[in-house]
Length: 176
Image 1: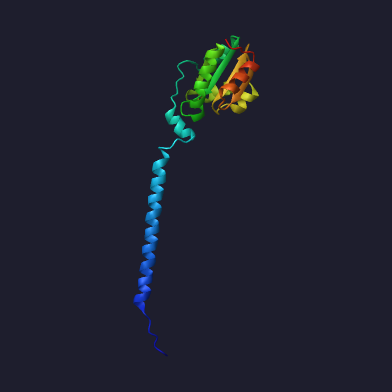
Image 2: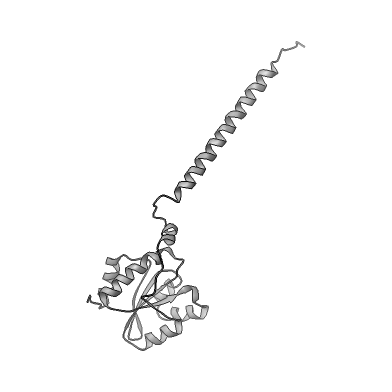
């Protein structure tokens, strides 16, 4: 057999050089990842979690009720607007100021149900009100309009002022 002259130092140098390149790429990747994560909190995004932290959840202009109190109010007759939501819902935080503006413009009192305080028995009572409420209940924000002891209309999800205005006017509300 012929003895081949193998230059192991050259091979070893190439391996070390490749390791340096891999390490440099990993460091660069880590730096870029850190920078991109660090700037996410300072940019103005439309992420509902960021909005949730920024928007207050002020329901002080609403009348908070238990489910039993709400059922009594519904049976008493007249027309009521119920807002069903909770403070950790980003869309609820966006919707509360819209509802407050409409409440002022149309002269009604919003009756507020905090879903964080509901029991399974409460959910059953709301679900018995109407099929729409039954299908939508548990998702927030939920707006329910009742009249003379019956479900009249409702809307699941965030509405801007014009959408809420259309829902109210469709159900007989008039601006003051």
